[in-house]
Length: 78
Figure (cartoon, rainbow, N blue to C red):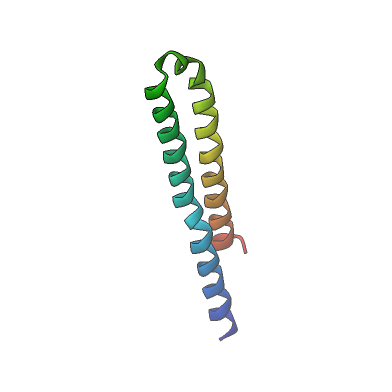
């Protein structure tokens, strides 16, 4: 019985950590939407902000990858 409860906790924790991937997708969408909104308001400044767009997307995706790694660790290593 104790092993079943421990494995249930692993899968619940992995599921909660897996939600980070969905939240990271929302973050990437938010970064891209704000860039597009700013680029449409001021097209001449859009080229200068492209690097900032890619850095913001990379940080948001890194959080999703880290949460996926935590989910895998909870499922298979703990």
